[in-house]
Picture 1 (cartoon, rainbow, N blue to C red):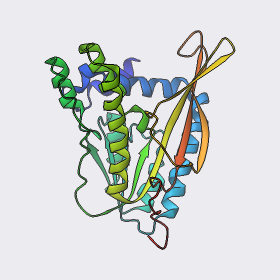
Picture 2 (picture 1 turned 45 degrees about the vertical axis):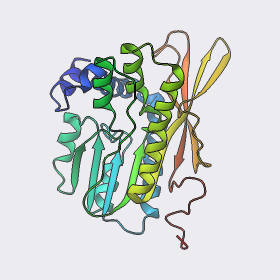
Picture 3 (picture 1 turned 120 degrees about the vertical axis):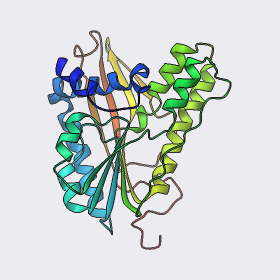
Picture 4 (picture 1 turned 60 degrees about the vertical axis):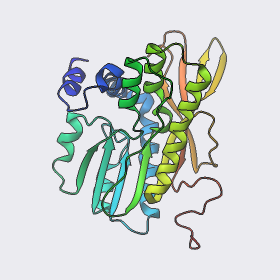
Length: 274
């Protein structure tokens, strides 16, 4: 725990992210990934394998962008840096560990950005208790040469968690329906941004949360019930086995992997007719 605190305390990030909980969440993920490594192992391996399959589907290998790169636990960084001329790792916080790993490679660039664009305006609105209008998602514009592959790795379900919690904590008068609409906008905008930002899209996301206690299982959609096409692969991520995080229950997330994601009705990037 102390090592994680030092790791993120020394990492540069916009000042408002700490009071919102982004720094704490990044630290907790790193800690749990280490403590629950046996339970997380198959999920991380499946994520890496599906990313590698997406690499093979690409026609061009000039630039790849990874959104939600984190500490690279689920990212096959060696395969990416060898396959592409340029690798861009985008995350709202870049840990010192990630910086240390990547500084040895000249074709790997770290980009510290909020993929939703709402963190700062949500912080300001909540602190001022002015939520007449909730901010809309404004994903960043990716500058430079065209992106051949963009990868969203285990991020989609997490986009609204911290902003929504921060709004609820500071502005309890916000109607649940407004918060749901706010959260859904973040998910839909992210999917649209992915498909507009690159020739090829690899999307991996947990979509269902399953809580098991006393012989009963409760399932909850965690991507705001946004319609998604049939995935290429599905697996269960045992994110919190019983007794590891919660004493009375275990939590599993069902993960969908799309090696060539396109919203329903749009042609695939690898379709010869596209």
